[in-house]
Each structure stands twice: as C-alpha cells, then as structure tokens.
Image (cartoon, rainbow over all chains, first blue to last red; front, side):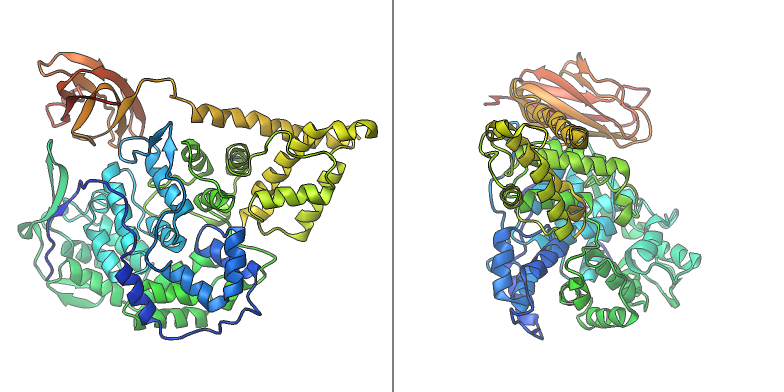
Length: 479
Length: 132
C-alpha cells in the first residue's frame, strides 16, 4: 500500500539544475563494456549523424574533434556529457534588452527551453527531456507548473524510468491535466489509469477492467486552492479506495506505487518503451532481435534509460547510409539545430512564433498522445515556415550576409564554399552541392559581361540565397 | 536567359520580404516605457497571478484562459474602484492588459457572471520601488 506525500504545486522558478556531477560519475563507473574505439571507421559524417540524432547537430569544430577521438569516446561524451557536469555556453538570451521571464511573459517559456537546446553542453539530456515531454504530454496548465514538470523530466531524463513514472504520477501539472487530482474513492477518474497503460507504459495488453481497477488504486489525491498559495495537491488517505483490486492478473489492496510497479513489471512494458526510445533516434523500425536485446538491457539495468540509449547510439543501423539521412527533424530540432550549428543564439521572440506555425509549440502538445511526428511535420504550410526560419537565421544569426563583403569575382566554387562554411558546414549531398554551385555559376548571367566586376551587390544576394538554401533545402530537413 | 532566372530573382525577393517581419519582432516594444509582466491564468473558478508583487509603473497582465467559459480580468484598487479591465477572453485564448499602477494593493478579479464570487479573484502588491 503506498502513500503519497503532499506536493506543492507552485514552486519558484529558478534555472533548471544540470545533472548532478555524482550521477554522471556513477554512470561512468557503471559502464560494463567498451566498444571498439578506433578512428579508422569513424568519420565526421558519423559524428554529424550521432550529434543530430542525439542532440541538435554538430558544429564543424565538434565534427572534426570527435572524428579524431573515435567512436567509443564520442558516444561516451554524448551520453555522459562533459566532465564536471553540463552547463550553458554562450550568451544568455535577452529579448527587448531584458533577460527572459519564462513564467510571466508569453512565449518566453519556449525561448527558455530552446535556448537550453542551443547552448547546453549536454544536448542529449535536452533531447530526452523533449522526448519525455512528448511521452508524458501535458498541456493547458499554469506556466509555473509546466516549468516545474520540465525540471522533473530533465532530472530523470537518463535515469530510472520507474522513478520518473513515480514523479510524473505525482506531478501537479500531470495530475491536473489527467484529472488524477480530485479522483477519490467515491468518484474515481479513469483518465490517468488509461493513459498510464496505453501511452506511458504498455501500449496494449490490458482490459477495461484493468483500467477501472487501477483507477481505484490511484485514488486519494485532492486539490487545495487558496488565493495566497495557489494550487497544491496532497494525498488524503481517507479519499483512497483501500479495497481489493484486480489489476493485470494480480489481486491485492493496491495503492499508487503498487500499480506503477505492476505496469513496469508487465511483459509488454520493456518492449514498448525501448521501441519508443529507438524511434526517437532511428527511422528504420527495430528488428525483433534488436527489441529483445534492448529490452534485456533495460530490464537487466533495473529499468534504467541510459544503458538503452547508449546501446541504440552504438547500434550499426543508426549509422547506415550516412549519405542519405532518413529521420525527419521535428520543428524544435530543426530550429534549435539551425541556431546551434550556425553559431547563432536565441536573441528575440521570433522562434516562438515560428515553432507554433511549424506545428510544435513547446509546453503545448496537441493532446495527451503528444505530437504525431515523422512525415506529419512536413505539410506545405509548415515547410514554408521552415523557409522563413532560414531567412531569419541568414538575416539575424551568425551567417548573416555583410553587405559588400563578397566580390562578384569569386568563382562559383568559392562562392559556394563561403556560404557552406558560414552556415556550419552541414551535411549535403553531392547533388545539392552541384546544384548550388551551378546556381552560383549562372547567377550573373543576365548581366552583361562588361559589368560583372561591378556587380558585387548581386554577390550579396547570391550569398544570402545560397545560405538560405543550405539551411532550408531538402538535405537539412532530415538527419 | 532572363526567364531562366526569374525563379531565382523571385526567391531573392521573397527572402528580402520576409526579413522585415523579424526586424519588427526584434524591436516591437523597444520604444515603450519599462514595464513588469505578470502572468495570469483563468479557469473555473480560480484566477492565479504568477507574481504577488511588482514595482510601481506599467504592469502588463498577460491573461491566458485555460478554462471552458469566457473570462476577463478587472483590476480594482484597495477601495474597490475599477482601474482597468481587459476584453473578454474565450477558452484557449489570451489577451494583454497594460495598466499604470501606483504603490498599493490591488484586487484582480473576473467579474463575468458570478465568477468572482465563485473564487476567481487574486491580488497583487505594487511596491514603491520603481523599475529601473
């Protein structure tokens, strides 16, 4: 029988803490096997693939550095983060001359998290926080509660799933969103119990009766509200149904933690969760053998997320066809990646508006099932907004074109190279490179040859166009 | 030859046309006096202010309606006199109420139907310290 302590819903918002150093050290010690770490089969293309899948892209410096260090060292760095713990690198955002106010100012919550994705030295933690935000999708709750939940997801991002599930179950934003708060023995609400099984842990293999009985076991949380302290949620034993329940083939006087233990111990849970994690990183569905292996790793580690992620990031399938990316970047990954890899930062509110137009507003998933993802990101309208993002980065980010800095006398190859370097040397196909070089070669064709050398103004426009196409072209939509 | 490049020229034009929008965002309120933002949420039947105090001067109340009914925000002084009111906001919508307040205590309510009576009220203390 479990009890649940009182949880305060409104907590002061401070910066989200980085992973404790001790935790990182523990995970380093916990590593049980080393992969071949040679550099011969580990190239910048491998690093770029890994950094995009596990984060928000690699800068040219990162690609070169980690290609030299080899596969094992790179994967360890990506998973563990830097020694000494994660930090934010680069200038903190200021909008209209002021620091962000994520609690009180609309859209600043989005900018605040986006900034972490752009500047964090441990992007995998942000990527997994985003994954859990989609997995435990919550919306329409007070901003302080959503930011508090975000801290919770980040804290557990690579840790124990059972601990994460326990804290999410008690999280005020989630409790209010799925009506667990206020679910009492006299009026049990089935919303949370249903999603616990369908979306959070099993994906199937349960009955309506399991949902009903589990909802009885999850009763007891009540909401308090006062003008002074806002909303708070506490566990009230008198409101809990302490009768015998039958859940997933087991019977007992189950409480909250008993139900969470039951779903986590169910045979469908491990395959369900490792498959979802796989789909975060790899577009190709996992083979049965892969699912079995990942599920064994997951169970063997006591439901730890980190060993599963490490195994996926080390899997050969992730590095297949480096010349033909096949994973669609979500809008958030696309925007954060475009800023990060071009050396740009969050400097105004525009990305909030763009993300909403692209179909992925942080803290506002469309339903409890999260975002659809995949090809659903690529409608004609949302793609248009991706082009607008490229305009924005070229106009206001680090790759912005300086007037008069690009002579018309540059060869097409030189013009291409300048643009390519300015946008962070993204992975592009030979076909794209040929097309862009051809564009540069033909750019001045409508100007009489006698005036070409004086057409530097047209060279600015060429640079702007090349950079835009490198950021927004087909190659950049996939990773 | 000109026809062949029309697409490129149009692309360049579209590129240039899109940029002023971002510039507008960057300088949207640069000319305004300093102000303090206060997040406010409304739902049945409570009103939450994300700050309990703010320095005197311009306050920008950012009201989000997370409820199902229509709500509004009314600012009253300690004597109950109405200082300002927002427009009515439908479910899922947002609005902003910008108001200049002197030091003192203020009541924030939704005065539609019996919403205030049912709990949609909060307060904020405006302090003498002015925003720099």
